Amino acid sequence: MTPSTPISRRTFVTVAGLASAAWLSPVRAQLAGKPLTLVVPAAAGGTTDIAARMLAEPLGKILQTSVIVDNRSGGNGNIAGQLVARGPTDGSSLLVQYSGYQCITPLIQPMPGFDPATHLKPIGHLIDAPQLMVVRADFPANTFAEFLRYAKANPARINYASSGNGSLQHVTTELLKDLTKTYLVHIPYRGTGPALNDLLAGTVDFTITTPPPLLPHIRAGKLKALMVTGRTRLAALPNIPTATEAGVPLVASSWFAVYGPSGLSNDLQNRLSLAIRQVVESDNFKKRAEDQGAKAVVMSGAELATLGSNERNMWARIVKLANIKAD
Image (cartoon, rainbow, N blue to C red; front, top):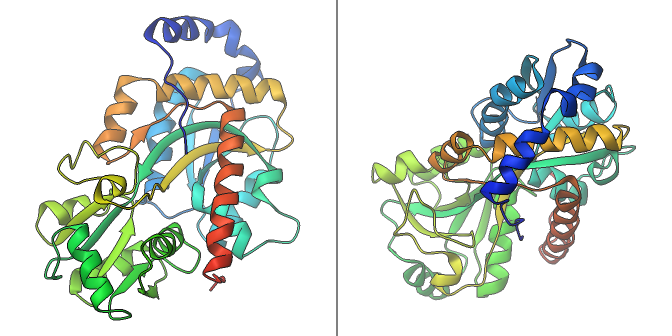
């Protein structure tokens, strides 16, 4: 995944100037005083929900309307996705989407009459959250090199937790298995919470997931971080190497972005994209993202569409290789 180059400060000033009342008046006219709803395909407290709430208040100020976060979990993201896809096309109902639901769910659990790639229109990127590989506190390895030696010496004796079959945690670890030629046993759970609980209890050996739920336990010494799957190290954990630095060419991040219904006009798509860009480029948004172990990343709708297509193709190979099926 290759994020777009951040716009310069001078360009940002120009863009901010364009986002005047005149520039955004068509969006405000469409909303006509109605609140804008950000539909979230996950329960409150997860990274998708966090990203939506980071966006809501500043976006409301730019558009001069209230912004509501509506959590609609279930169906591997299909419930929320269909709600937006079949909803109003005036910009009042948008989806804060998780990359796993956008790119992986359709590969393992296709929904008749609904495909995120064609029924949702990409508007703008929010944050990129590389994943962390963590092991239980008493696991006999303190580095990824030690983990790999142990795994090769003990095939099929190491198990890993994920939030379910086809989750990003699952496919990322299957990619790790393919790259390292190791035999690791998958234990699927119904969500990151239950998986993390069993990891902390020592029932499973490791997991790979986004940083926000892991950081408090790493800092408390209850989990050991071995590597991060992003292109760069995490500011929150500067001593933890990337997978590439640890010796395996693994780059896999969760990302979170905004989509609208396919019937949204190109004009509204572009204007909403500009408003979201303003939020993501702000110092406050960048700082909040960094505090969550993530990174604010600006992308246009077209760049977001390319990202989604490329990642779906990448994960399709792993889904087929590992014969991953929906629960």
